[in-house]
Length: 160
Image (cartoon, rainbow, N blue to C red; front, side, top):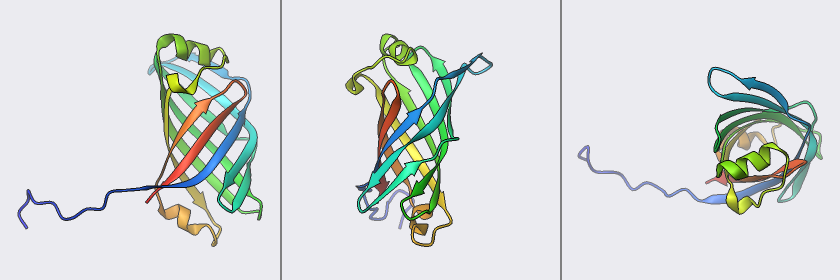
């Protein structure tokens, strides 16, 4: 095979994994720093529903945000889920959220914005010690989301 010839590579497909409703507390504004404006959004609870399973979002996590400019935010959320069976899943979710400066300002003020006006895509990674769920340690996931005044709604897909 020559260097310019590609083998027959599979095209990834998406398979639904879960819907999340992550409840958040008031933002903690760190302010403008070297890289942009820093904010910390406490995660205070929530719920998760997958096919044949459900979980709750445990309080104590946070979304560490970098507001890069008036139309782009980089998100870095870390939190824990507890399944109905008592298994714990650590979530590390990185995301980009972008929109017009006016729409992004509305979100920052806690006002509702139609999700059609905001690009919110994420790449969650999962870690668990559960033998039944060990497969999620070895897969990649992608998702989409919407920031609502009191919570973040997300839908995660396994990248098959």
